Image 1 (cartoon, one colour):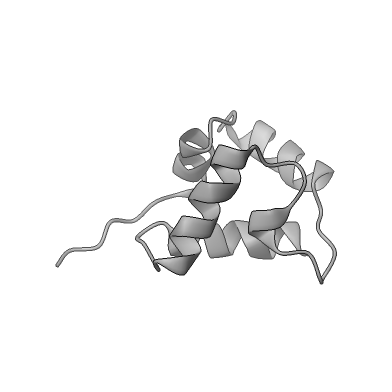
Image 2 (image 1 turned 135 degrees about the vertical axis):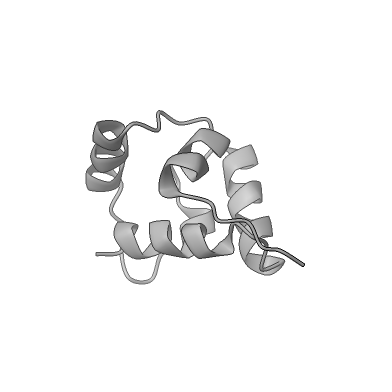
Length: 76
């Protein structure tokens, strides 16, 4: 089985967010999470975005790696 590489830009597009580098940087700087906040339950996600992120992580989908990357960036 061949895995698919998804970029941060592709993840933002999948989530319905602006996915140019400046928009991604702005989103990350405006949505920092505390160490005890789970990415998928963050208050700024729509229900659909939250469900997608949760599904990616629980099913260890091919999106999981880039979701983990976003999680790390938001927890810096």
